[in-house]
Image (cartoon, one colour):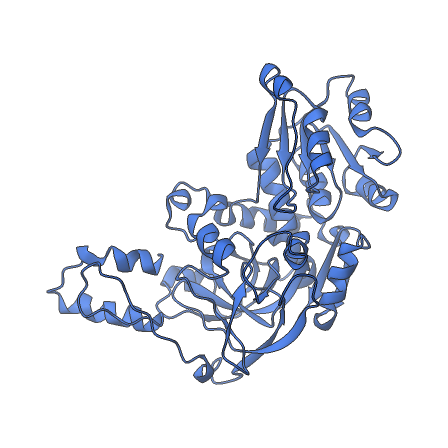
Length: 434
């Protein structure tokens, strides 16, 4: 339940009930909020939580995290007060965090985001604490000590989209986390140890030794799946699955082209193969990536630096174009290539983020006359899809080990993003924080 939404709708509570009143004060206290004298829909006043007094089960009271301060400046590792989960939230001891281009866009100033912040949004870890007043079903589903993976789209579970099962469009996630860098009470959980100043969160802020994650974004991991490789399930694989299952609706026998074979694009190849696509065409400009693409499920590869990708795709498909083309790079030119590569009535699915000022072009007449479908897809649906991805990995249908090409230490996170920016990472890199 989104606490503030409850606060503002609280006029329906019967004020004469001392039981409800006592419960209400406990709920507010547990979430660091002053309970109003009258529950009448008036604006609620918050008070600052003394984070310095919070210890993890009587143990450590602080942790380390990698901080992004401003565009084109290096990450620094800083000490933080131990983050404190609130109702419906879980404190995770982070074991691994993937290195993603979305973080890099923020670091380069291409995607506006609140700063300073802790980046990192595809994580695995161990449950160490539940927020106060978290419901018993969540506690039973995610017990202390459970191995978990977190989705970067963290659904609130109560907005209009979440109620319809469209977790990927969660109102609270975009209004609070992506727009303000907070969780869904409008507050961050991260405070610097030396000054107490707040630091914002990109998703859960996974480049940290501990992170707070809304429970709806978590799924348990079996012991058979390693922490490091499994981290990519929360973004690279999660994004690919959303594109293939919900946007493209890939069916057995479909032809699929994937433009841009990085961490997400290479995951698209594996998901397309799992869905039974008969022709899977990988497009990139790096031969090493295309060689790996063959191993991940591509039936054909095209080096777009050496030949016209659109013409080659049409040649492969007998002049028709593919049923589904996926743009996983986030470039205006590849956006256009994607729309030109699909058959009449085909689907061009866009999943690559880019500079916020970038714009894509399209042939409007062909779009209208030949019923070309252009579909944006940001990710999958955490509550429904993340457990399915765990099963795909557990069964070996999705090969995690082949998708992760590099592992690095926590202190090397900054260098990993530099290498990603220079195109020196094939597949996905993962930061190990264990």
